[in-house]
Length: 116
Image 1: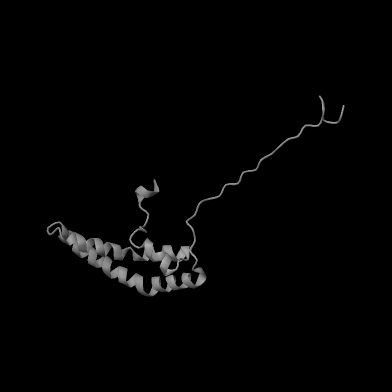
Image 2: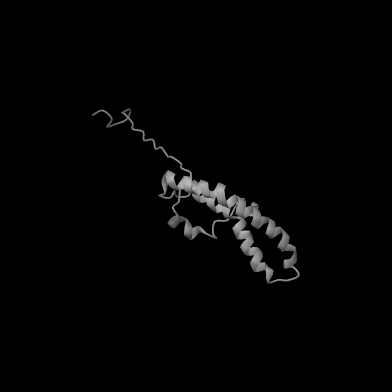
């Protein structure tokens, strides 16, 4: 009998290896230059603008119960207040402006309900 052809022969074992990867959002094609542009925009412009609009939002929101059309104004102010998140998200993804535009208004900060 040939080696491994009968009883008591060589047995082959097969092992498989699996790798797990975490899924992360796809990165943009902007590179480090766009990361720096988003950072400068975030620090020099958006922090001040969103701070002012947050103050306006706080002042106007109680009056929207008395005058419901103010809801359009408060929705816009809330969107502008959330611009630093939009900018930081695009900075971390290194998105160019063309890649970031479709995300405007759709990139919302995470909430307790979205984390569950």
